Length: 438
Image (cartoon, rainbow, N blue to C red; front, side, top):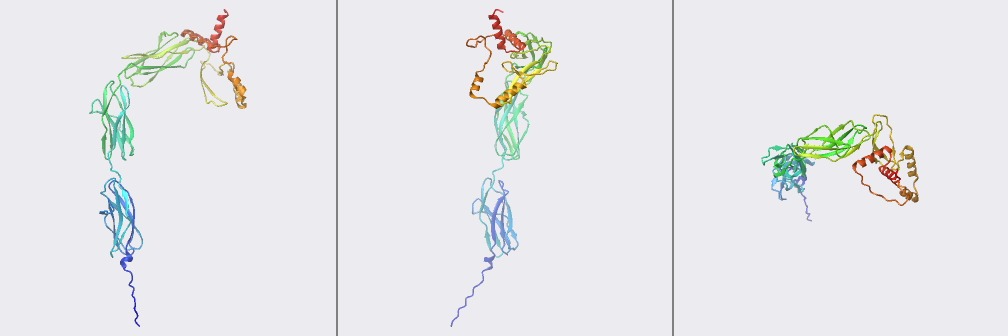
């Protein structure tokens, strides 16, 4: 009987010990370099490893080979590569070869290098504003991801000669709107300018642009309100824009449109395109009198007269009152404002309604209670109809327009203040007396 014996040879050591390679991620990626990572398990046999990389999956380049001793656990490995092309996709994998010839390749992975590090982008833009002796010049700067500073060169030729203060920007990668102020300019003159930006990579200059400063001119004035009015004095206020020339000012005032009196001459300086607050204090005025006033300013190119305004002095010893507005209005409350000049004596104050009723705590409480209770539709209609302004006569009412000259308007207003009534009531009383032959 023939017996056949089969002998099975053990698996080769090479097949059992081939290294295991796992490709990891890429980090610290710049425009020309990166760090590649992965793990290698020697599977008991000493080995060497390196990363293959290139711009295709055929690779073409390798990192420096590195040895690993025999072991049976995965070992984290890295390799730095450089000399890369900016803004380019790279393929790479981890490759290991052990002493017995066993090889292990990791999966193919990719990364993209960053864009090139470049100088900032600087674009000169139109002026933001131009005055007689100054200008705010605009520009746009893209720092391109690096700390960047800019300035704006300017001058009467393209050689410039002056710069705005250097300004630091962040390291963003998007355009930023910037501006610089050119000062000490000459009026009615052409200037050239450009933006200059610099980061660690380089300096960029924007295109040259130009502008013309404004001509010098007569001052600009604005008469303001009178304040601190008493029975014998007041403070007059206003603003003066000297228009870049030495400028003086006075307040003219008086009891008629001819005015007739002036304050002491004052200097408003020679600022450019700036409204300078000015004031003057009057004293020795007549009590219970309406005064007209205006601000007048002059420089070497002319004189400008402000609008005429007025104020009324009070009765000696009587407070001077100016009604203000209502604010913080709700369905049951409101804040009423105004100004009171006690004229040197202890003073109390209260308000009046349009019809002359005193607004006291009792009235306020009554109105608030009404609002809380609410109104029937019929009541609301009746309140809307209301008596309105007092009328003259019993027949159907009409409104007649009356033109008053300045002096008559002033006298009417003074009488209304004295009698504690409206101007309309003063006119009605005068008309009634005239018609009745009083």
